[in-house]
Length: 280
Ligand code: DHB
Ligand code: FE
Image (spheres, rainbow, N blue to C red):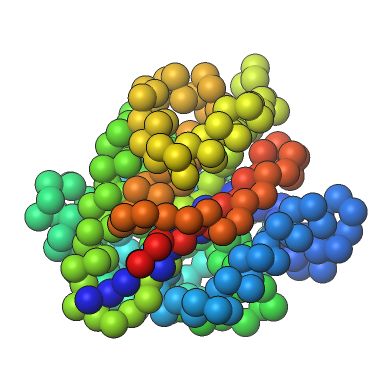
């Protein structure tokens, strides 16, 4: 059976793509952020995952406000990026894993998650930027990928509790996949940020750090909050932390925190990074 080796949760701010294109990783503004990924690179070199299940939120590239699934799973052999209007370079297509996609889809539907199945799927910055951060250098990542989207761009969004349960179901589905693959789960977004409205620029460092800590000590801690409470606590786009929650919930059994970083600000967003490995 497949083995989940851990999860990596990270911010996905588009301007990171611009910084990579301009090779600004060692610039004083950017280095506290990019340096945070060095221990992650060392870990990835050591554990060498075969597949990445990437939980993220699409921002209007693949789904728009007219048709917006709460949960969607990719089932394509390839996932293309496209120009999103952020001015970031379009990156090469990513390899899919059809076998894991369909196993996930069948298992999730069997467990009463009403997901949307996407046999064609464009992936936006929330998928591509974390891939470039984990596997820098401009070459295609050495993993096959399965994208999973959770809607956080238009209300009603799924609750933290529901997202956590989805994560648990994703984890047990991966573990029942008949494969000897090593699987990494990724969760991208957040942490606290609000891009528009009266509270534009809102960041809540105290909550972010408490949330990151909770993922080790009590991973379902954030499920006590309703969606509107979360908007109040972390901003209207900070609710992207649901991806972190689902990714962490996918890990079976005991875990060990390998690394974390928290840096304010990249653009308008508190940039968090965590690497949690499963203890087998
Ligand atoms: C920013 C953050 C995001 O999560 C996003 O999807 C787009 C922009 C920002 O901080 O600029
Ligand atoms: Fe975002």
